Length: 202
Image (cartoon, rainbow, N blue to C red; front, side, top):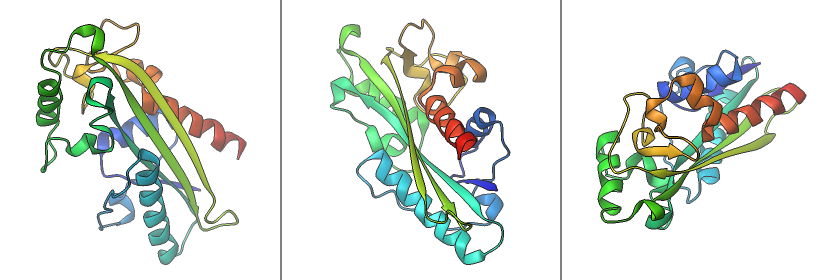
């Protein structure tokens, strides 16, 4: 069965494919040209929305059944009341820009001591079957990693808020880690491993 990841983000697709150890297709590779508006107020709501829309598209085209996997994830900062949350990718406005998003978070934490710079990354995956005997069935996986935010970006790997985030027990930001190290401890890594276990039992 095809696995279609409901994203055009190549960073995400590479991470998820590596952890799943399976070939996956992106939206570009199945010729899905629309943009899905992420209008939900939670990560799960947005992931469900994306999975549902892409699954409907694939059903309409017919062909081999597929499993659509949709991800929504972001940074939740304690001192900012959980922001940026579902707005993580567009926190500093449009167009999306990692550097601007990081700068806005740091500005919001200006003067906040290290003891109060706790944060977490959260990832929710929703998988929906499109076609086949399990058509319409969904499954939800979630991963969370706690940590704290530094005073300035460090590291050139990763993307998003990775240069600011020190996972608990680590002296390096995620952006200073290799892809293998990141996947072993990240929120997305935890969610995708849960998805992989479910797929192996499904």
